Length: 285
Image 1: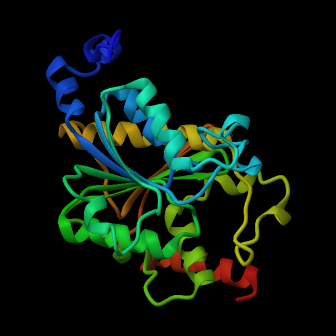
Image 2: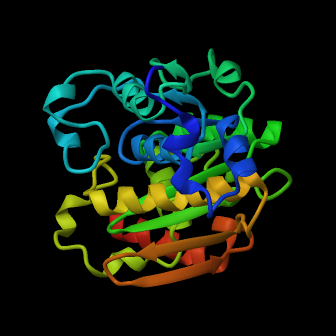
């Protein structure tokens, strides 16, 4: 494209990465399922890092309730497919981007295609999209694809990495065969065992797992994108320490606190089992 130069556009990355590493990022392919709360920010952050290839999936359209936190949400994108809006934004950053778009989301029919030639998966699915999430993480485990999830909780980012040969998503969360509500409880506890975000919730009535709803903030989504991109850089370039599950890391911007947790057995760990039991009691399940 006239006026665009990859080398110039991403030249300010050089120093934190070498010119050779920048070229390696240019040829890496990252899959992101979900272009909503965190997924859109993941895509745009990695595009600015200079990652050149993406497989992106989402079956939803933008609505007014997305305005508080979602990249791409605005008056000009109302009722437009999220995946198309974000693809256009990524191409605006790098017109040479190779983007494969999946407007029906990730399902059994397109799972193989979605992960073809992928170097890394980053989770951007809705909190309650358990079937799709279990499916994609299982595929990553079976095919040796590194997978990263960073959850926006309160004003914090909670990180879990699932690496080839290590603990799998299912081994950690233990969701298989559970009810939807039980999955929600287990997922929430497993994502952030330190629960740094629990101290400043202003209105507890806004959290209702039974009704599949909860509050959100832009701060958490943007923190998540920075954390996910940093992990992506380390994984894609094979440099730096990558903590994998059952290790977890949560940074809370409101409390200015960082927690590093280690839960051998994941949700089978006594601390997590206790937290799950307390959550069940509070929810009356």
